Image (cartoon, rainbow, N blue to C red; front, side, top):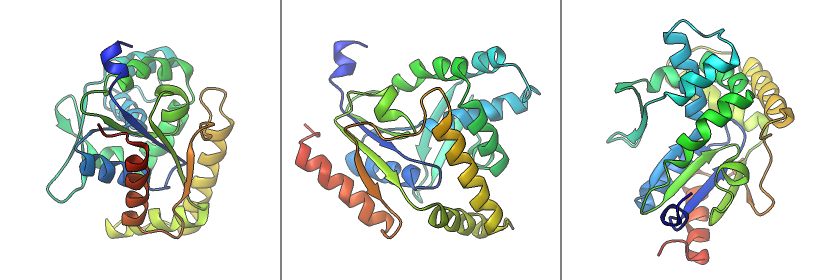
Length: 231
């Protein structure tokens, strides 16, 4: 990493699936006027790209090649909702599909894929700063982050949030089934050999179970101010 890149501040927001880190990261990035990296979406994008090329069942080496060739851009529409482009095409809906998330969780456990995406992730570190959300942003990808947050919530609360999101989109899904999927994903993510889901040693823990989105965002912005991260 160059000296210039090392001087660009990073806020790492990690946590399990459904903790709200994506929404919070977007709000923090918008408030600061910084760039955004949704690292979890990268693994979903590998899943989308593999499916579109008929290689969902490809070997690890081929999935790593697909990962290395990703052309991705993140953005936000006028309503503050996420937008994700893959090779110039918006794929936001595909990326957030449940089946895509399940495949992405399996892909994220493949060492060659993680290695292929590492430089891509670090390439998002641009002035004036970066807000990166994922599962290993503070512990592995940006260990020198000025602020590391580990955002969590109970599995029950995360299942309720996801259930509401899907119902709002007109998708009928079982709440118990969602709870099982989240628990399975937590176990798989925390037990994997490569970059398991766990807080960085110097991360600040933040339980969002009983907090609003705005309250969580403000807490992080208060930490940013206290640490003088914004120059």
